[in-house]
Amino acid sequence: MKKIFLSAVLLAATASCTNDNPLTNDESANAVAKTESNVSRICPSEEIREAALRDSPELMSRYMNVEKQTQEFLKNAEMGRVLADGTIEIPVIVNVLYRSSAENVSDAQIQSQIAVLNADFAAKNADITKLPTEFQTIAAGATGVSFRLVKVNRKSTTVTNWQANDAMKKASTKGIDATDPVHYLNMWVVGDMGGILGYATFPESAGLWNDGVVIAGKYFGKTNNAPFNLGRTATHEVGHYLNLRHIWGDATCGSDLVADTPTQTTKNYGVPSYPKYDVCGGVSRSTMFMNYMDYVDDAAMYAFSAGQKTRIQATTAGPRAGLKVY
Ligand code: ARG
Ligand code: ZN
Ligand code: CA
Image 1 (cartoon, rainbow, N blue to C red):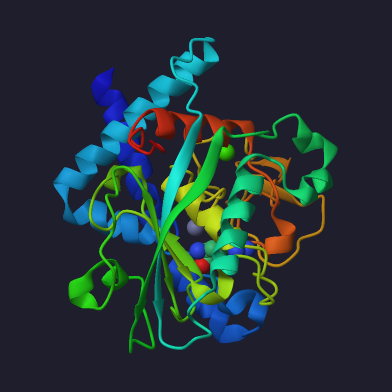
Image 2: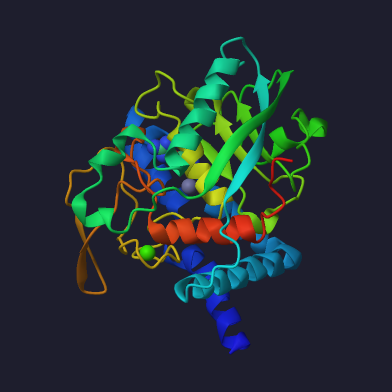
């Protein structure tokens, strides 16, 4: 039984490497038409994770433990035996790396991001009212996760082009070292990462030096950089940090390991019009493209599902239980 489960997890871990390569797809999409809506359309969190898992047996075993724990939590929740409800206030450290005063995001800007996270994870965002009736039954409601800004670290830099390679997370590579990543969510705000809005580590990296979320400053908090102007890049990346996968499972008709989110063929961009049906395995389903874990514009995403909430709670009660405001 245990063996079967582990191979299933391994399969899930490698499936997205073989079925689909979002990085390549996105790059070729960019080559076709560079509009503001699709020029920054790469979220490399899952690809970075897969490379790291391939490189490190240690990280792979942490990953398998996280997923095993998550599935156990899910079973307990289904049977009405949730041991810990996973409600948590996450202390946040914001590390700002800036080259110009424009890149040195203001305290107000940072507070606007914390406010967006608190609204979105509590389903108190104003646009939740746009959720179509058919998805209201599976809406997460409050996830039980809230955020509190604890400290802002700032450092000026000469780096013009950051990459999604963790350099910003170490003082020795012109970054800022993480503050106690077992107990704090570290967020790094950098000037520019080319086509990348942000990226995150998943819970198998809990407490490691590179654990946390990176966001390009232009998209951090509420800004005037439409269509990524509502602080939802952080909502999406913190979703990964709390063990949510992309809703299309990073593969054609892939799985996000969440039962209630309808399987969809691939990522969506821009502002899709509802309803949007996808056929996977011969079954046509109305897709939940307004989910924070899709790739749509900030104004087009406004909900987590109940199944995603369960994974989040498995994470805050499990591999990320160290996150607490004392
Ligand atoms: N990391 C993703 C990206 O770089 C974030 C996408 C989040 N979507 C959004 N509308 N902000 O594309
Ligand atoms: Zn992502
Ligand atoms: Ca699903």
